Amino acid sequence: MSRPHVTLKLATSLDGRIATASGESRWITGQESRAEVQRLRAAAQAVMIGAGTARADDPELLARTDPPPGRQPLRVVLDTEFSLPPRGRLFASLDRGPVLIIGALDGNPAARAALEAAGAQTGAVSRGPVGIDAEAALDLLAEEGVERVLVEGGGVLAASLLGADAVDRLEWFRAPMLMGGDGRPSVAALELARLAEAPAWRRVALRELGPDLWESYERA
Ligand SMILES: NC(=O)c1ccc[n+]([C@@H]2O[C@H](COP(=O)([O-])OP(=O)(O)OC[C@H]3O[C@@H](n4cnc5c(N)ncnc54)[C@H](OP(=O)(O)O)[C@@H]3O)[C@@H](O)[C@H]2O)c1
Image (cartoon, rainbow, N blue to C red; front, top):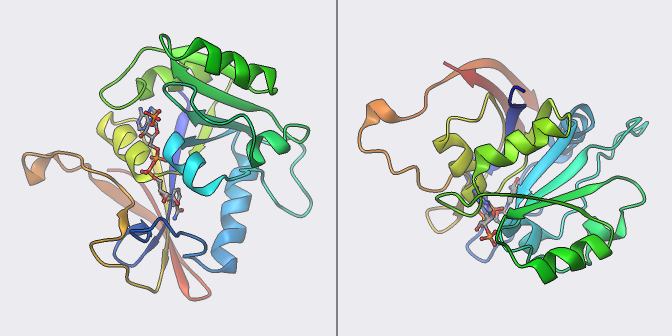
């Protein structure tokens, strides 16, 4: 079974930051950009985030389009120890769309059971260099019939997928503000030894969305 097509969405400042040092990230981009993100969500079969974003932002991850999509995407969180509290907006909206928490095979079984009791689906894969093995998580999604995933951050998850060469497309929404080096990076460390190792991308579209720019890239 082939791995799902992975689109990484980034909503950043001009200098590629996704949040202030204190974690504030709402809202960096403007209304038009956010509406396009909702359309990307509606077109994806699954939307995926890391546990850091789930904890910091308590997102709902539903596609809020008008009209709403026929089916909401599967909302996926990579949470190694199944440590998310089984409450918050993902759980409050289970009647509108499913939530899948993927953790480690040897993640906390009691915490996993609590997430299931609260109505989430769970899955488990082996551990990776950071958290769980990101590629194994994508394989698990393929087994669930998912062909297209939209990854919505944060920077640690973005780096681990880019480092595994598992991202097919970037949708980059860039707002005209600067956050500086103490802002949270959109892509955490890639630990490149040489410039030649930097993942290279080919821009396939560039549009203005009010004050923002929306750039789309595919692998070069
Ligand atoms: N501007 C935007 O569009 C945007 C979007 C998203 C997030 N944000 C901001 O970004 C910040 C959170 O980002 P973050 O980088 O700290 O966290 P993140 O990337 O959302 O989550 C990272 C965490 O996910 C878990 N994880 C499990 N498997 C993983 C894997 N294979 N690769 C990577 N992570 C894995 C790990 O936690 P465990 O060990 O606990 O499992 C890891 O520490 C927040 O401030 C949020 O507001 C902004």
